[in-house]
Length: 261
Image (cartoon, rainbow, N blue to C red; front, side):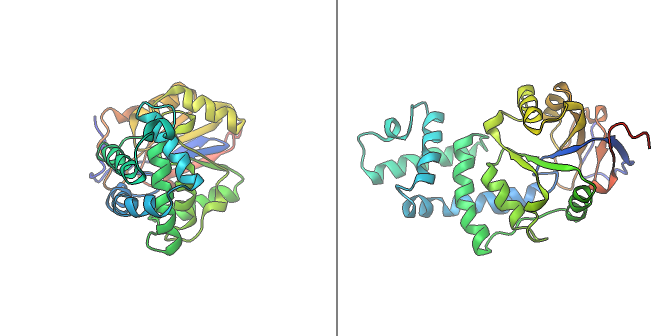
């Protein structure tokens, strides 16, 4: 039976033994609507101006190298060879907008979006939304000695900007690490094994929380504990009864592995 984010589901407390919480962002800590209705349009609106004003800078060129590989070229030089700067910028714009239209989860796009978002967050034009229960839960878990890490398709830089400029203030010091698609796709088992090795914990001592069942299946196959986040605005997840379900972080009851209480 599907779990609907629009339903009045009353999920019970979920008791887990863990040393690290690995969290998704969209649909888990923040609303999908904020990301899609505010952050994505901001990046699209400001993209051309950003490329124009930062042309030739190292950070932009690094993102362009990633985009070039996505387009089938060795690097930005091969991709943009033999054309004027104005034509090169036009080629980049057209390709990036195509990726945005597909909501492609590719590293170059996420890096470029992160660069554009930086200006929005630093000027105050963007302020990250969080569900009401999130700031208190993050602080409570951190005070209890748990590691909290993020795994999102958005670049590590955009994650850091996001949690550094939230409606609850700067929450970045609460996190021990961040991962993006450079470790692999979120539906790939190997990605979670890589993350577990980096954290330095057995996979079964890590809890991954996400609103996407396919991601949870990959994490669970890798040996992690998996919890489905059902938040307002999330897509329905068919077959989600195989995972514990939470509608709020307050429903997570965390204990240390080996503690029977």
